[in-house]
Length: 336
Image (cartoon, rainbow, N blue to C red; front, side, top):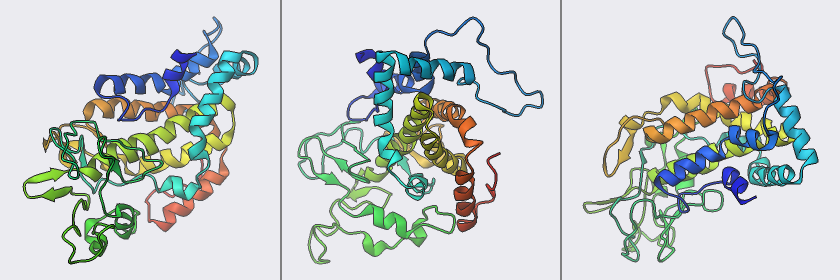
């Protein structure tokens, strides 16, 4: 059972680093879940016939024969049922969110992303070394915060969530020029004359102390908001739909996938990212090697829930309202 758990559990940057993290994400991909729960394919099983016009008409990997076998195994085999139960539990936090809250999880490309807070750095509070990926991030329980693994101080010290929302433009995308900079202060030291008033404050461009820079928010956006909340939500919700057939999971995955689709092409890690305190390379939200896997996971997740989304009129209504509210070019008034 432990090997199955490793394939579907949520990963966190404080648990795994480097190649281990990438391998864990690969194992957690929905196609692996399908293989686990469905068992070996029958000789008669075939992939759906491709549409001659090039349009996608049904799921490629999770077509009807696979899904029927998968859910039959969940109903009839304790090991598959246990995996499905864990998959549902992993998706529950996103199932508990409203559509509006899910939609707002995805962010725009206007804030620089950094691959680490400081590759050879230390904690500003306790001054102990905190290298590479050692900062702790729990986006679901500590949004927009990173924890020092030694003294457990949280950074940044300002309420970045409030600052972020103050800077959203008419498209729901953060713009520095619109944000309320009066919100940029250490919440524990609100007095302007307090010497710690600006200690640990990050406006999205890093907390700076002389020549030192800690990229707290830039790192959080990759490992917290993106990998844990957005991508993690899509992955867990789509897997739960495959395992259960409950359209509520597919609906919520659709909300996230659609908002990612609105913004994904605006990301360019080479121009917007920081890598080892220097220039970055290719990528989207993340650097190139993670971006490759993340894009694959997004495509697989869509394939898993596509058939349910085509029947989801409530999703079309919600997304159409969002498109009008935030002046998004695509009207989204149809499931197609």
